[in-house]
Structures are given as structure tokens and as C-alpha cells.
Image 1 (cartoon, one colour):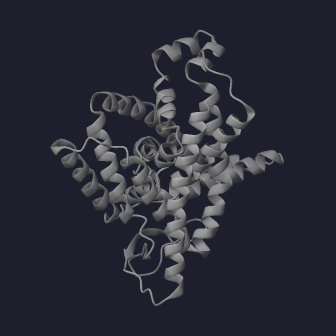
Image 2 (tube, rainbow, N blue to C red):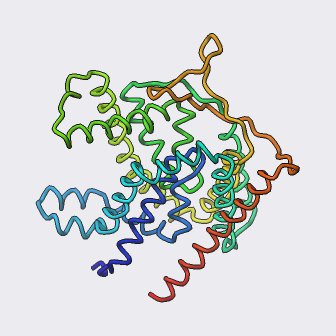
Length: 339
């Protein structure tokens, strides 16, 4: 039997969902890291693993309460609710600050990832030849991903389904940014900007009784793409959690070493000092998305000039990011001791 959650517990789960949703949308940041440092990663993976054949039998048999308890529905529903709210609120705030204070935002993320490396690595006492090799492999892969060039946009529905499976990996694998993977696959703008905006516009129109979107072929196609992407994400979330659960059970220390290496390598993705590189057409002009915004493809990184005051502010925000993660760890330990 699941223990009864207090109102405070429920609010905290929604806040955790907000954090995961916001992190998943930002290229280079992993929602899995949020789960890891906030202390609910194991419960998250465990709950997803419960979505199995037995769960479907309960659901198809009309035993909805048993199904809800079996899959830890109170936890998953609140967490997913927080993620959904995040996509239309917190992530919008992040977009706003990324546009106006990009250096400080990336500095904060950089510090938070350094803090997460400390959080994950400080209690890992199993370094040996095998785990060092595994950690090195994870490090090399993480660094390599940050320097890959993105593919062109592809709206093939089978590929969209695959994008859904891959993009959700950031929720189950700490350090792997699903949104950055979508950039590499060429579909970040299509799936996390255009599709989300289409859904938002459609919902706003439905609220006022406007059904004109039905006669808009482009909107219908975009909503279809979003539906397939969502199905792929749901499928990937469940299957990856089962795979990760198996790997953690049978190769726990090797897997942990790979994750530590991978997260360390991902620092290259969120390095604060970088110039954006935008997509260009054959004439060397910027390619714009449906909202008239330039399409980001990668970054040109550089070492900062500390003669400039703004770079010292960036260092301060890096320290703030580290402090935030260390503080979350301390708070999580305090709450666990009380329970």
C-alpha cells in the first residue's frame, strides 16, 4: 500500500515536475539530473517500470483504482501535471531570460551541472579498472555530442515517432539532454516550438468556441506530428525505464560510472561563453521558423576575457548554480531524515 501524501508532499511533486519540464526544454540540460538531485529519481524509474502487462490487465479489466495504486499514480500524475504546466509557463520564462540574459542563464546551468556531478560522484566509492573505462567512455561521448552538427528538419511520421523515443531519454538518463538531441536530429523547432505553439493556439481557440483550425491543413498536420511525437515519447519513457532498471540492477556501478562521465562531458554543451550559430540558406541568409525566429544549430565556444565585468557576474552565477544544487542535496537529506 502506498502511504498517504500530505498536501505539502503533493505541492513539492508538482514543483519537481515544473523543474523537470523546464530542464527538458532547454538544450544541454537534462530533466533526469533534476530527478537525481531532488531525490526522486529512483521512485520515478520504479513507477515507470510498473507500467507493464499487469498494469494493462488491471486497466482493461476495469480495475481503475488498483491500476492507479499499482503504477504509483498519485506520484506520476502530479509529476506529469507539473511538466505540462512547465511547458506553457516556466519554460516560457526561461525562453525570456535566455533571450535577454543568455550568459547568466547558461552560467547558472553550468554551475548546477557541476553541482550535480558532485552530488552523484561524492558517494561513488567503486572506482576500479572497469568503472574508470566506463566513465571515460561516457565522458568522451558527452563531449563529442556537444560538437556534432545538426541534421535537416524531417517531418516523416516514423522519424517523428523515433524522435519522441530518443528525446525522452533526458528524463531517464541524467546528463543526456533530450532537447539537444532533437537539435542534432534537426527537429527541435518543429517538435518543441512549432508543435507546442500550434497546440497552445488550438486550445485557446477551442476555449472561445473557434473551430476554424479544422480547415487549416498546416495546423492539422502540425497537431498530427505532435500526437505522433507524444506517442513516441510515452513509448520511449516506459521502455527506457525498463531497460535502465535492468541495467542498473545487473551493472549498477558500471552504469553509474558512465552517467558520471556523461554528465561531466555534457558541460561542453552548457559552457556559458559561446556565440550562437544559426542555420543559413544557400545564399548565406538566416533561415527563420514559423514565428520569424532564427534557427539555432550549434555554438562557437570561446574562453572569457575576465577584464570584462559581465564575465565576473557569470562566475558568480556559476557559484550560485553550484550552491543551489548543494542546497537541494542538503534539503533532500533533511526531509528523508524526518521521514
